[in-house]
Amino acid sequence: MIQKLHDLDTALFLWLNGRYTPWLDPIMLWVTERNSWFPFYAVLVGWIIYRYRKQAVGLLLTIIAAVAMGDQLSSSVLKPLTGRPRPCHVAALQKSIHHILDCGGQYGFVSSHAATTFALATSLWLLLGRQHPWIRLAFGWAALVSYSRIYVAAHYPLDVLAGTGVGILSAVICTAVYTALRERSARQRLS
Image 1: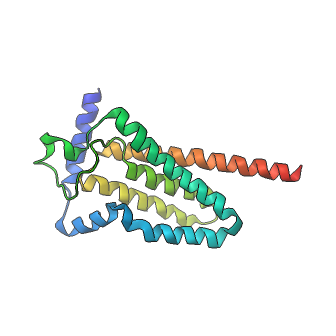
Image 2: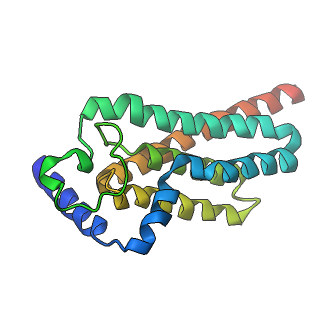
Image 3: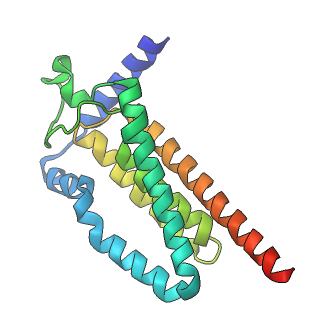
């Protein structure tokens, strides 16, 4: 059963990775690089501070905790635990993949990019989505960054899907803790 799942995942990876065009390569390289998004993060932090003033510290700490949890679960727990090589490290795939980036670490399950971007998008949505429906666009950004990892041959689709789950779970946990602490604090002020 696991071998069949791996074979399906590999076939889907080869199909998706094979849907490349040379003009898209530099765009996907830019999308997949973490440093490309620092201006976006700076604007986001500035907007949260400006818009939420007193609440900003709690909101930002919650978002940071969700992203850090997603990153650590994927990089420090699941990758070493599963030991699944990235497709760009599999010798049998080398002639079949479109590889445009240094391969990175040995293991790929789960995608840290997917975990961190979906942790950010989900925590933003859970914390601020009711007041700002446009925040749902962050899920499109997270999906694009996650797909870029398949495009550059760093991850299988299942790596990305599992990373998405890790990121969403991390955000749900961290925002639930934040909400519980805020409610407890509000009750104590009323007492």
